[in-house]
Image 1 (cartoon, rainbow, N blue to C red):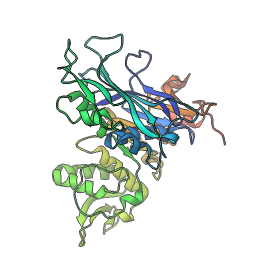
Image 2 (image 1 turned 135 degrees about the vertical axis):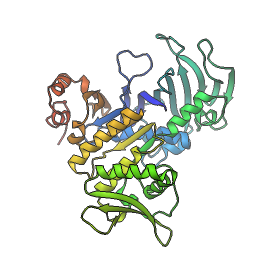
Image 3 (image 1 turned 60 degrees about the vertical axis):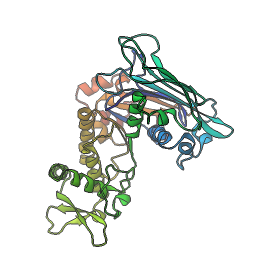
Image 4 (image 1 turned 180 degrees about the vertical axis):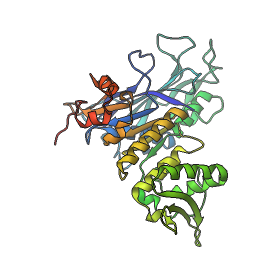
Length: 406
């Protein structure tokens, strides 16, 4: 499963030039940790940074015009950092697995005759033993035309052969097309990596809906198909899923067990059996916090884990002790399953469960641009945490130097 080592975002709303983690041969930076937490004031750019991942996934699934025109983005003119010119740019740096050489993917998006188009796409991979210089380009397109090396790279050769590439639609990513061809396995794996990203915008009311019975493999972004995912996991391996539900029930105070049942009109119901109650409660009657905790734990129990999970403010509706518990669950999942988890939060309780290397402070400068800084790089913070002071408490006490206007 692919693992993100770093990302650089330029001219995307308030993110004029922001880098998380390492990019290529930058010795000064460390790889992005499996769990990354963004903190900062309202309007600082946390949600924008999370949406940048959603934007990339939408570009791949549809095209750059459709991704720009999503209601939350409002078109390319509103997407590009105000007062700037030039393309919106994304640079990903990731590793396919522990043994492979890292790959960088650069994407530029600009406007032509009022239509957002792909200005360039470049994929690079360093040769075996390379420590200096630019990695070799195995895909390079500008304005929908360029070249790509087919096949796998070896120690001495970039690929099988160099082939010309010309796309009919300049709004589509080359990796969308090349990633469907068996002659381009590295591109196919990048495409699968991005397609596997999951951005959670959980809505308790959506999860309370009564979907038509029918198994579905993965959660949607709002949790509307929660019962369908439960049904899928139950069908795949009933015994293993029973163990998953038992584990989840132990982590939600007051829950004895969780089951599914089918109503007379073909709807699927989630049944929660609470301690002290003879009759079960259904999802429609459960609190926001209980539903949210169940959904996140179910997501983490997916037998085919997502390579990247993004969650905005998971603490909303949760009792503070559950917030700490959820932070621990996310941290364990990211470390054990080698999945990238990116979380935004306003909760010191969530931050208390993390290390300074996992927490990034994001805030605006005098120009209105978002800047990010690791808590570990703020003077004195690592030493205070090592002495036993919780990181969330240090943040709450303004030891991180956060600028807040009240």
